[in-house]
Image (tube, rainbow, N blue to C red; front, side, top):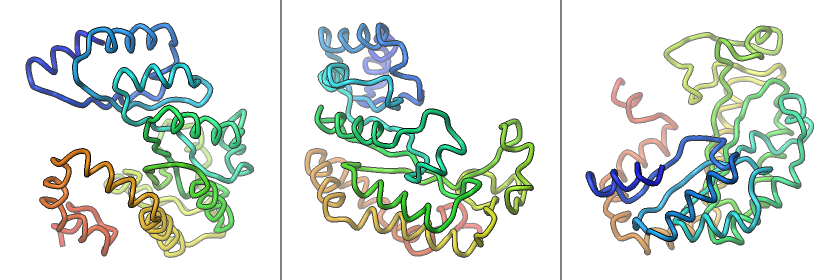
Length: 246
């Protein structure tokens, strides 16, 4: 892995890598060796990764920080423990909250990965998710719209759990193709936008982005270049491709 990063840096000038692997920290010896190589022979590169709460501790996080880890993403799914227990084993949101605080203690940005519209979702459970996320030192988050893909265990009886429109062009986790019982699509869209807007309008989140941009002047240029697209998305809740089709 180290030699792959060195090739990317020397051949293409890459300065940052995002590891799309939610088991990135599963093999402790492997990550110890990798991060120590980055510390002993720096490449002047930074990286993001995903992790599971049970696979990280403060010593590992500090070593990852020294190796150039910039942000860690953790799967939260929902802040309603009862709802989460219906879809995942060994649920403990307090343990997850403690690990998020450890990540921040190590000086690494945190990103929460959530999902709205799980079977059993209610307006009350969405409110619990918002309260949970806003109580934690999370710098960034991604809120996906639950999509039951063929082959997943829940797909077998998904029609019994709510309304499901199996339109393949829209099954991208950015459309509410599944609506839980007791909810409406309009209600879900309204709560989705409220969740995002409330998070990104919080002062500490805005200050975090300002500090990040200040440390990286190139960020200002990229932001200004894409400001129009961002504002169109903020007003319409539609991605660029959808806006251009109209």
